[in-house]
Image (cartoon, rainbow, N blue to C red; front, side):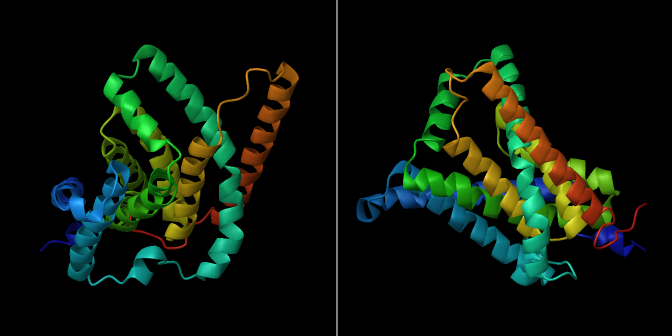
Length: 267
């Protein structure tokens, strides 16, 4: 007789199919919206945001009905209050953002040097950071919210019931990176997905995950490259502050979250 753990949704295969379902829903809705755009009058980025919201909404509605899962359970499964998580966990989480940005910038610069961006990829990333309201909402708000609901709230939630701790975290991080469909965001997604996965496994709350994801994306949009006129001393002081902030964040989180809020069975 199958164990309850083997029935937990989703498995790795089901998670891949779930992402495919989201992609197809967004595609179909996007096509329908483009056909109706003479009445809507939306630009390409606005259509993309609306397609993502509606596509994800359709899939979430089906999955959550099937799993008998409420949105409150999806966002905050922890026995700790949501207010306590917001007040105590989110501040040290945000201290990690500058360090993550420095590390990922260095990694991406190396990756771009090895494998330069194609014209299509340059155009795509330019549209994502064009400063428009739609692009800003998509990158800084909608992407963190919808991606955390899917990859941590549903996928990792199920993985933690089926697999060992690090199998679940790394498996969901791999899927998160692969979902971006390019090598540059795959690398970012893999690193961020691992950090976010650990955070979710320890807190069983999407609140700190969404906060970290949104802060990182906002930082990449609003904080430009270090000015060329900056002196070596300024750069050194800035790097020191980043390291201090990251170190304080890591120490605080390790102290608070050394034991996961909800223990999961390990094979």
